Image (cartoon, rainbow, N blue to C red; front, side):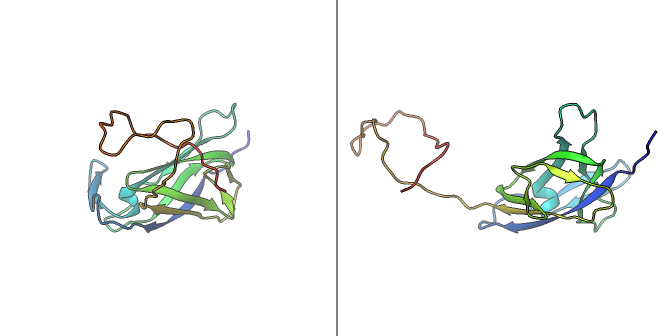
Length: 159
């Protein structure tokens, strides 16, 4: 039997929000104490799930606050292996998630024993607008009754 310890990875979050909308505080309780939550701890949920088909169990999640002023984010309980980062933004979106130059939104997180790595996450809330013409779709005259649902662009090519 080989015994290995689980790894913990600190998470640095940079918030580039353009609006002041959203919740500014929340709380979490461990049954004994209630901790105030704010900033990235309030805006983001992070987990790691096994990337390999036959990996049983495993995975990691954010460590709960250790005290009243603990704003640190640490992904813990990770054994050596490959994981998909599962990050969910409660405000805005996750523009990037990297670790040592690896794009964790598209590539697995690789955990090795004893490595001191950090996950960097950039959160934003800006939006983009796109104007153009769809080929093969008739135009609707200005002022006409438009009973169509909004469209979504899955990918766009530019010239």
